[in-house]
Length: 241
Image 1 (cartoon, helix red, strand yellow):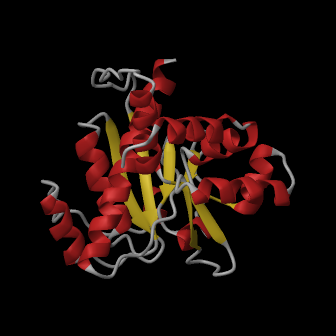
Image 2 (image 1 turned 45 degrees about the vertical axis):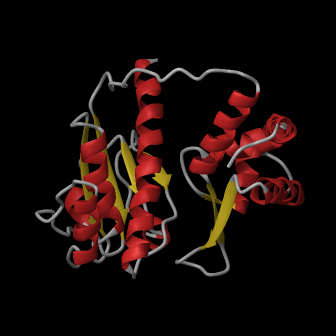
């Protein structure tokens, strides 16, 4: 993809609108249903839907039907697309983006990933977080109906140079009462029944499809890697400040 000067200006104007900027900012950390976005930005449903359509037309935001309730749609930020368009706009304006130094998290964090079976999505997320954070995050995963780690998850992660063959499925009751900075649900169904943790725990939802084919496992791993990279960047800034 390569943006013309006109397209770059259009991209900047798209994000310059206050409501669209609020929507993008809300979706940076997690996924939400439209009713939740209405509460986030404090605007009427029809106005939020109108601006979501503009963001979807530019592929900055996408939607997928909830696995828990098929009548609901979860909206997600296409972080890869946003990054490309931002970089292309900067190049069109002759802005050189310097590569920031590797970020270190000033204080260790504890993160728990949850899905239904603790067999694929949450296991992949656990392995990716452990590797990308380089031990700066103490990470775990669990599920509401744990089964066993799927061979395709192990195989896909091996392609990333990560061995999760020794990870095991666990029930989330095992972790209740333990302190976590973040509990991240990667399954729509488990979000609806996620148990309470401590008052200091921040809950985040990433609406990830349940993979069945090997290609779908690869796509989920790619999406989670992007999410985790951004999460760690924001965590660094939050802890540093």
